Image (cartoon, rainbow, N blue to C red; front, side, top):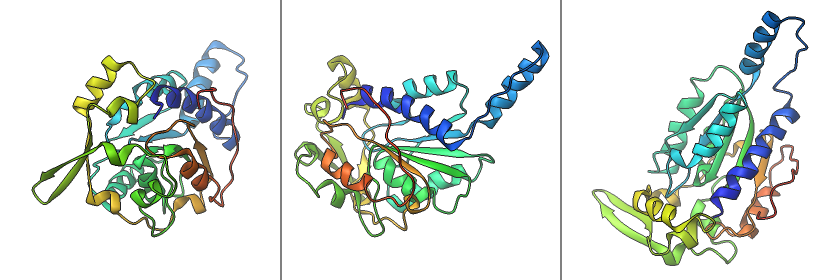
Length: 255
């Protein structure tokens, strides 16, 4: 996966999304005091962006995106996805949305897309879903089923399975981590990422999705053309299915 390019493209996409949804407004203040008040009101009017990481990563993978969004005045929460099972992971993320009173944009990366597909269901304040190199399963589908729909994923040959009490966890072989997961980052950085990677319960990746929120919530997709985990053909297949609105935005040529 091209992590650096994903983050760069995501910042552009979220900015366009916010304008498209009409979730922010502009005011022409007449004085310095009014300017400060307007700035505060504008910040409050912006949606909270909830970022959900996928397998083999943690919330720190969003750091560059968080910094950019906070600089732009967006409230941000990077959820700590448990990575145990799809139903439970979605319930955990959903509990975070329960605590947010205003509008929300949910963003999922990789397996995190499956989580937001289910977590957003039933939340009227979720105004948009953004899938960044992510799974967007339909009802009854599993992430692993989708990953194998078209050829091209390097993940199966790179998986290392380690048992734990009650189940098995899947890791990426550290020797293959950079090529499979973050080929556009320096090797010195990906060695650290490989050593600190968050595994997922293998059984959890077989979890069946419920009714997808993308059937009723406007959805956007950012698709890297050199993704080695979820083949681009799979991502394009999923991006064509939502009944909600969709738009295209320019992203760097590396996508």
